[in-house]
View 1 (tube, one colour):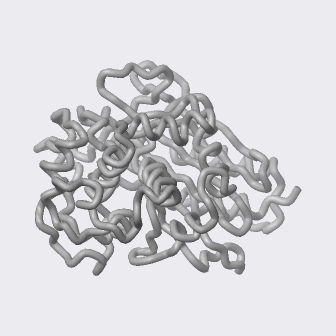
View 2: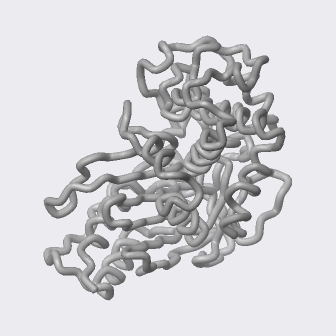
Length: 358
């Protein structure tokens, strides 16, 4: 769905020297200014310097959010999927330059697409998300996500058509790539994607507040999500959908604390080897690596850094995991309202958090 943005004019902070107290005041002021609903977590120098929740987890009941609130994290799921694939690569169970039929012999789509091309969105597959605007979604629904589908059905019905571009030739962000990757994980492991996710990442890291959304599971402390309808000029609940249909491309929920655990494990080399991380964090076509965007020469106060960023948005659910490779600064923003400029927000917080002096 097309992203709705309220352009935010962040507060100017003139001094480059920035105290911890000043950072907290700055974030509080920004959150108040944009009526932010969600949680913001910042870690620098291996210490959490900010973790605070704002607004409501449920607007109808005016239920306040907390740092324990679970949020739909949308495409941050792709980061997890990419990590699972790279773990299988390390075990020689998957090859980056092998093609889909090596692992799914019955695959009816283009048989030359490689695992690497799925990971970096250069497969050339037809984009399965055809909704062009919120107005269109409100009028016509979102058919792909409003009928329950199994992983196999998603693969066969939506991810097996002829390619629209030569595989490897261009970047085209497409949930279909990661639905195929989820099916490959299942084919190689003989287990469901959710089970592999739990056994390989969630349980070893003790991420007890993270998992896959499903229509038949009632989750404690899960934030309801909302988007803005311009025709009604008001905030409304998300359209009905089977969230499990986003599958390995976007079906996860988590908390800020759990995502920090995952971030530290990935960037700290605890669940992947350095060679795997080096492959993931190459900025290729579209400045995309494997499951994440990678920005080289990202400038903050006249210094250049390498940024690994994984945003996500599905209707009112918004999220971002932002990490500076050189300094380790990590910012996680989770929100249940889809009308803020989360990219602008995290960029501005990165500047201010980088200025903090101990």
